[in-house]
Image (tube, rainbow, N blue to C red; front, side, top):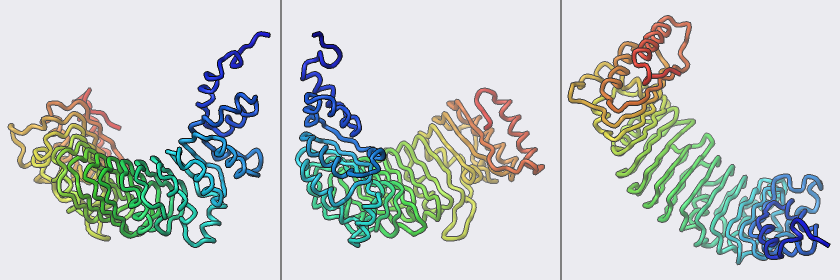
Length: 426
């Protein structure tokens, strides 16, 4: 009798092929084909239980099925569980594979977990068992509530920590990060937190912190090797160690950024400042530090301290570009552009001045006020930028029925026509 398909393959090849499976549904389906295929389960390096893994069974016996698969996968290195599960079973599952497990990702916002957390009054106590996986290298947690620091001990080998959509107490999250002293990647995204968080991570290279909520929040980050930092939601920021920092993004969607403290940014290439309101002291201090920046995004609507919204003060165009001689791409939104278009902003222009590195500029214009000065500034950017390849002008939220707005828009169109090929209107 002739064999065809996978039956004709040597057992080693079949084992190699099936070991690439990770989705729990696929693993279960293949395990039911033959004893040979079922014998491949111990060699699976990864198991993935999607959110809907047990929907067909109405969620019945999900814990038992998860437990059987984890027990059978003797060489399991990566475990991802998105479907609802009982937190009471988690310690046993992790204990079975504590020696081999390297990557763990859990979605812990199921009804059972919330009930367990509420009953215990500890918030994150049901995740203390993660500490038994001492060889863990990557940990990702979704939707948890952390009201106290988890009892993980020291996860010396952990390099990646991601927590998404969580409710965190400031001392709890500081304690959780403290338990992972050798992180290279830290991401806390869409997390509700207020108070003061302090992270000291000597090996950290990439950091993303996105804190939501209306409460005030302060950040102290001591990371001498960090190369990329993206933070959102903090009112007070202190960055200790920016010698290796190449990309820095600071945003505040609600409320104000009052202070940003950092000693120096000698290799910073990309800087993005976003938000409704920043203190001008924080903006100007960062701009003074970022003298080597190549890509600058200024999307701050107002300055001023506390509740008082104020326009940006006047910025000297010549001084600004002389301070940032390597700037290649400049995105100016509203307030910053207006600051460069004041009465005395162009007073130091002369034939010796050149914006030698600028290649691309994107300008958002929201008001026809001071239209003549704005047009002069646009013309100056074209005239004094020999390397400029593209200027994009975005007309945003300007009242079209206003006569001054119509006239200004006509002048912008003439300007674009005169510089056809380099200027575009959006």
